Image (cartoon, rainbow, N blue to C red; front, side):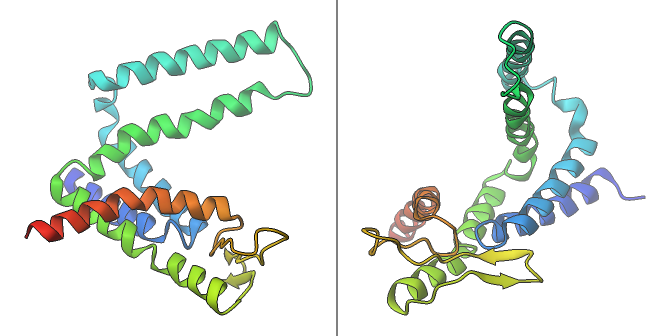
Length: 192
């Protein structure tokens, strides 16, 4: 039987692998991150209600649930599924708390940042090959489990690049996500 610390370290490796594969293999990354959350839930579930910062999330979850019941009964519209929108927020609330165990020290946060940036190398590769070499996809790996879209530009968007994502907006969003991490490493490098 594995001890609590051994299981959390296994969860840490699943979390790191999921973060590394996040931009390039979203489905595999999602599975790895899901396993890491399940490990954290089984090992740290009793700490969830003790953390005072989770109180707003618990209250919001309750209010969202009540709002969904209200909308279902009072504003009943058979074309709208109110529960889908409600259940969309649950993974975010759960992840917020249980990811904390995987980034609770400076060293873990640093490794997280490095893996996030190194995992972006395939994204930059796909952007470069799409823009300068006009390599367009979709490219399928692992029998279609991983798909890099690299769609050709349409109309006035001839200068846009989507990279391995299916839309240039997602590519821009990924650049916005990794930009602060890149800045931190640039400033840190200049200090030393």
